[in-house]
Length: 97
Image 1 (cartoon, rainbow, N blue to C red):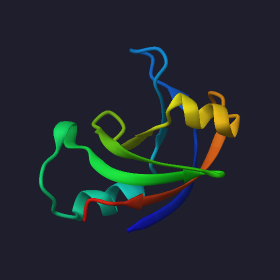
Image 2: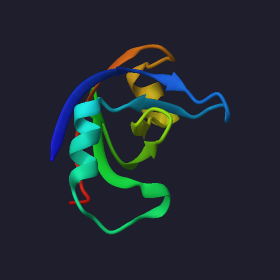
Image 3: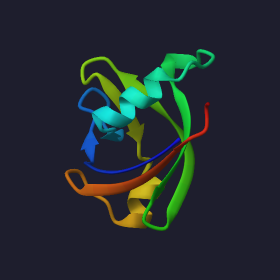
């Protein structure tokens, strides 16, 4: 299962330093529909690519948004020159199928 989307980079207000991208509704719905073994915090393992940077991580459900969020670590933000509010193009591959 693969998705390509563009989303704004945002910082979590409750804990400084954590940055995320919110998955589009269609991608979140497709991910939710696949039965899988439960993991911590409802996470789903993924491989993400932004620009020339690829990393393995997890997406996490966000009940307020009704979607999943993708954490974007500092190393990725630095390598790709990303700042809060930037529109970020992502290739996302779901590994938990």
